Length: 338
Image: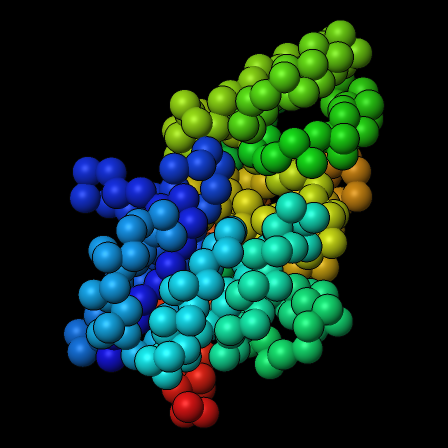
């Protein structure tokens, strides 16, 4: 079987595929590698939408199925070519980006040609089924990278706690609201690295919060384009998962939880429905300040045991091999209908 997987913002760096957009995670990369590892009879071609048609045509001619993940723009020529050759098209929806006004045309164009759709969560299936009814197959995101040993830090009163916040501009208002309650943590010296894609609005926000909350927490900005997440995690003690309550984007929160626990770091999380499965391993609280205080009140041994439980859940549910099997099941379901 030959699978052609189209992805926006795909680049190859030193023989490894990644995104050329800071802070953007390409959910297809790890499963694609796992599929080829598990099934030597399957070839997965990764293609960037900006490639000339002459380059892509050879892949299309050999394709048994084509998957389009987060594809923005109108690519009717490719869709029509696949349709003419009776190649089923799977439209993959990883978050609510297609609901944004400037992406509506991309969404509507692909909807005309898709054979089926995959989504990364049940809430996305419900949201898009209301707009364009379809058999939305849920294929979750997988965890990436190496599992690290739980590494909670013992912090006494007056000690420093290095926090990491890794998110997007839409999450900043919720962070501002959370900082107002950090008075509950006056027994500790708090520092927070805010890892985000920088622009003028983010810089203006940062100046305001430093002025308003600089006496509660020492803050610094980390440009996501220049500061790898792995390094930021290694330099932190606790991860604050952004409170992304935007409809359809809960998947970003659960991905942040998985990344944090997999890196061996304790994390504090707003209790979104998608994160409830990690209630025994992450600190879930509507007040991130109170959740952080509760975490710091736990012994190092208890924190590490909770992280280990979260890692066990991830290993049994979200590894690349497990998610690759979900993709294969979805693909085979589509091919059985053709």
